[in-house]
Image 1 (cartoon, each protein chain N blue to C red):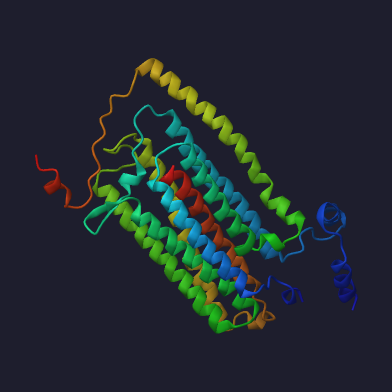
Image 2 (image 1 turned 90 degrees about the vertical axis):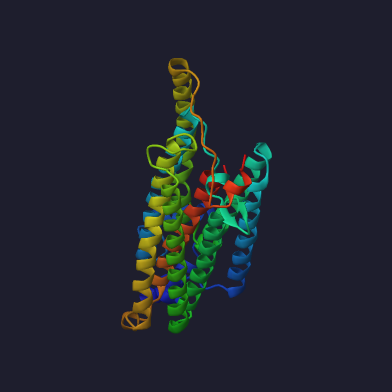
Length: 124
Length: 229
């Protein structure tokens, strides 16, 4: 009985969403070549949210569900924003106490090397 | 007979805010979806909180450490054409996962059209792409471990980098592995006519699809917060 209903939509919607995900992921990857800053952060978050909403709305069919289900599933995760806020305050506080008690970090990071091509470049 | 009347009644039920009140107060099942689908959504909601906890913990330790944070763009670079291309393997993994999401979406559609052969092959393709993703992740882990990255220390910066990396990608990889097995089980059942005996109901493909899309969804957040940030 219930199977007669279900989520049946034209294939075109999926192809468009699929293509959009590829393009947006390309954009996401491109942000890695930008300098760190407010613009980069903004773009990372924008592309992330666009991809996430596309997946939930079209691929997971949430856009076609009734509002009761949408609210029951998408409402609770909003509470995570409070956790993010609290934990960032906590993190800042711990960093402050560490700096106060142990001083600045003395860690000397090693340079990242991959593969074997580097040594010849780095000849003294 | 009475069921048919109920169904036509359901068709004129209100939408929007009034619909929410009506759905919750009408002394019937609240969500007008098969129970399996509602339960999968609720499971995914709980999984959302688990992954959020990992990502928030990662944020917290990254803020709190006084050591420099390793640059993921360099750490995850891969040599290609004689250069270090930043984040190359991760980008390929991302595209593999997106491709698998697309084949899964098509499998769900073919399932509702009762095209068992296409559903089977699309699900097998999805599982194969998932397995490819996990293999690439295994390669990534091997590479980093050989370079000295451990959950408790690494030569490139803050020790918390290793613990966050192994915890988050490990848990995600476990989800992908479980998904590959889940998809294969459903795919073979679709092929051998298991669901034909149950009224040719292929909602199960959509439910499996929800899980698979969720795994892709989590990767979107991991990619943004762990690899790009």
